Length: 104
Image 1 (cartoon, rainbow, N blue to C red):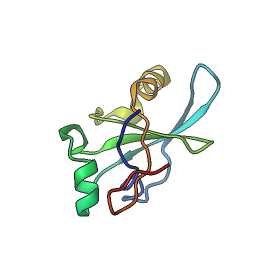
Image 2: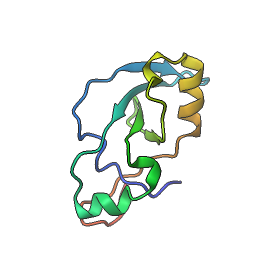
Image 3: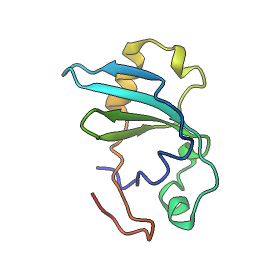
């Protein structure tokens, strides 16, 4: 399981742009997240270079989150099959407190 925190998944406030169901029938809502100014804790968590230009956030209706990065700029025009594959390949995003301690 990934140790990434979900600290910055809400930075842009953008609406969900796509939804796709996986092979098990779980519906995943998808949007692009572009990082803005980051706190020290967020910089530690998102220090990986693949997150530098943003990521796709997949969130299930049960609240599970996954991040896929790097992602193609034209992701919203890609086929549902590609989104399903990216969702399956994306690591789980676990929550962490702003002080850097792990959580949920």
